[in-house]
Image 1 (cartoon, one colour):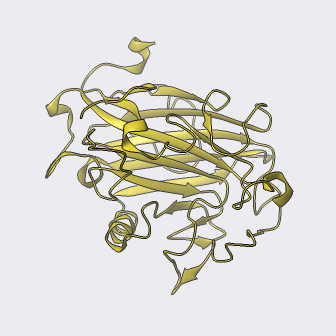
Image 2 (cartoon, rainbow, N blue to C red; image 1 turned 45 degrees about the vertical axis):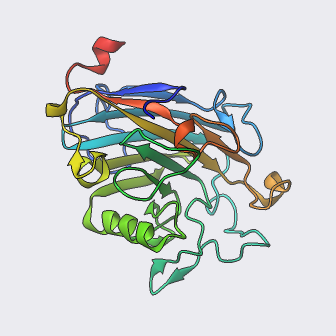
Length: 277
């Protein structure tokens, strides 16, 4: 099966951004905008106020890497404006072993963004990502990371983290720089910026052993994006994880990680976001 219903984003060629968590003037002017999250799917409590949680994002590529940026407004930052509390039933959400995240930890526990990509744009039933170049889910957390530990934001291994092979693949992408990201609190607080760089090879495998390049022409791939928001424990008291919000670009509240629920990202070989607008 190919393609998917739902939101459609275009990634046009653009200038290579600096991945430093700072939205420099004009740096993302050649990218396609992404807006959320009032009309996105919510998993826990719906977001109803932009002052509580809001997202402006961008996507583009430079032929070799795919780039996302996210400018998040968030009125309460977990672990910064609050203590680093953990849910009663899941005490290992921040567990590190020998200085690296364990597979028992929750990479998405905190204020965070997730990208789920299905470069092959294929599925057979209701499966979620496999954890390789053909379909994956990765996390950037504001206050913890694989490379920086607890306290420094950045990339973490995503799902299916219970799969040792997928976890090792994700770890390798981070360690080798196949994926890079920066996450910084905005000046004055009340939000943060994430910039994210993804190498086409090995992370955008559109066919077995083949990674997208502009020479292949335009290509549709599956995509979903999540914004997770932790506040105080009482703000998430009605769910076991304690989340206040978890909003998704596409899919249903219980099916958003299934490949057949993703939206579409069109990798454009030519053209510009400005011309599309």
